[in-house]
Length: 68
Image (cartoon, rainbow, N blue to C red; front, side, top):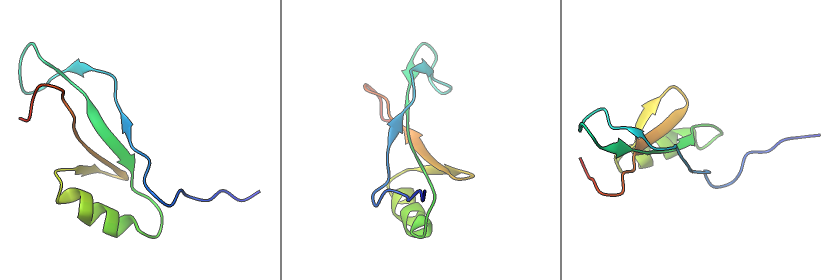
């Protein structure tokens, strides 16, 4: 059996957790895996949209009432 990567990235959201920047606030992160033959292009595109990279994961804060 062969496993193939999806043609479009799959995005996920973390459970709420205390915000490291604003006391008393909660944060969530939007993230996706950085993999496959288009990984470099995906990294370039999402980096321009505020995503950060940690090894093979791209993520950014996704907080309902905040844009800090």
